[in-house]
Length: 174
Image (cartoon, rainbow, N blue to C red; front, side):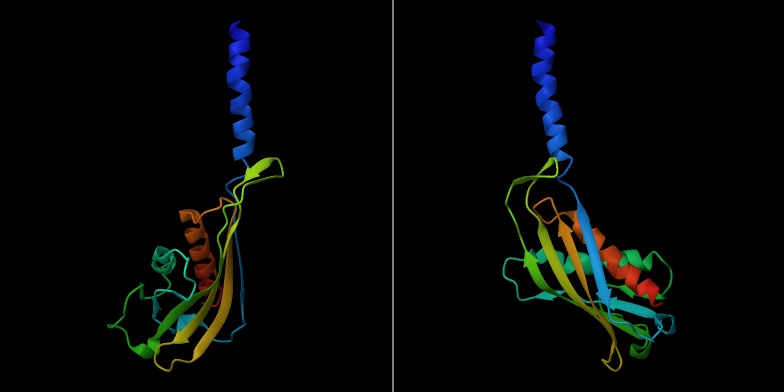
């Protein structure tokens, strides 16, 4: 009798474990225009709060992604100052501004069975970025970052993943 009771508990738990295993995938891709400008010639990077015209985009993400990017880039010790607020103690000619606009956002609440797991839909975000010389306003580089979460909602991990992709590019052209 105990063996049957254990089966009634273990079989549903095993099913839930297999179903959930396909739920947490986050992917980030990016493309940036090539640039000859080396960022090591600058002393500071100023991240601005991102913009969007998309009504249903989570507003906290507009500040969260640049803030996470600034904190991560600051930890790399490549620039004298990195901030997600106005930099006033370093000349504008030595400062880069990072602007971002959420160009596409696809929220999803669909639930489907795919690849051996339950998928709660995919959230996708496309952010267009521009790195500008603060003194002149000239573009140094432009690009696009795409984030995908198979969890079906905006998760902290997608912010971190997109921030890592932004910092990865900045370090590549350092």
